[in-house]
Amino acid sequence: MVTRGPFKEEAGSPVEPNGPVLRTVFRNNSIHLAHEDAEGVVCDASCTDEHLTMTQNAIHAKKKSVYAPGVTAAANSYNVLDGDQYQAGDDGTGNVFEDPRFDPGDPLRLLAGSKAIGLGKVKYGEIDLNGVAIGTDGGIEAGAYEYVPAR
Ligand SMILES: [Ca+2]
Image 1 (cartoon, rainbow, N blue to C red):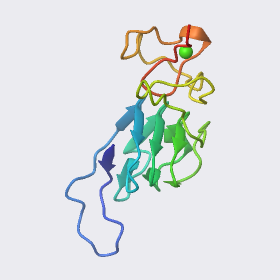
Image 2 (cartoon, rainbow, N blue to C red):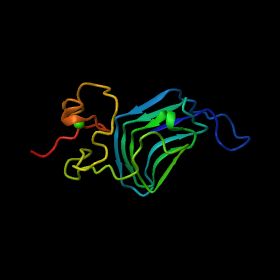
Image 3 (cartoon, rainbow, N blue to C red):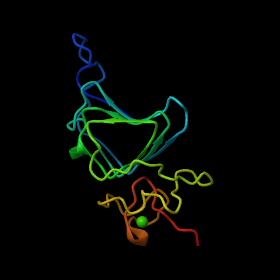
Image 4 (cartoon, rainbow, N blue to C red):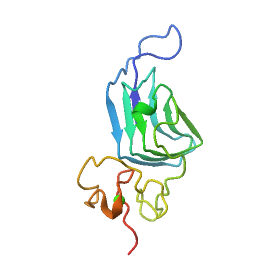
């Protein structure tokens, strides 16, 4: 996911032609990108909390989970983030920095023991992408899918 602030970082460089993108909200998404150059969330060009809010996402991106150096805990919360690098303004609010444990046999679904299970705080909808009620089994997940235990 890529969004933009208003200015390129280099002194004297021109105004960013693709920004600013104000009030981008990125929530309850699941990302699994294994390529060595993969980046999960990018908000470049003097991006701030005014440009990006990210919450309740489950992200594995090999190179970088997040590049958003101007985004702080006020706009970055309750995500599970995994990658070789993490570059935001701070560690965010309630973020967990470990593998979200996606099921390789059922892409982007969570395995038991994932820290995404129950990490969410706000129910933004009634059902997930599979029609499972959000909040089932005692908690709201980070990511796009409710955890469904093996039965
Ligand atoms: Ca749940």
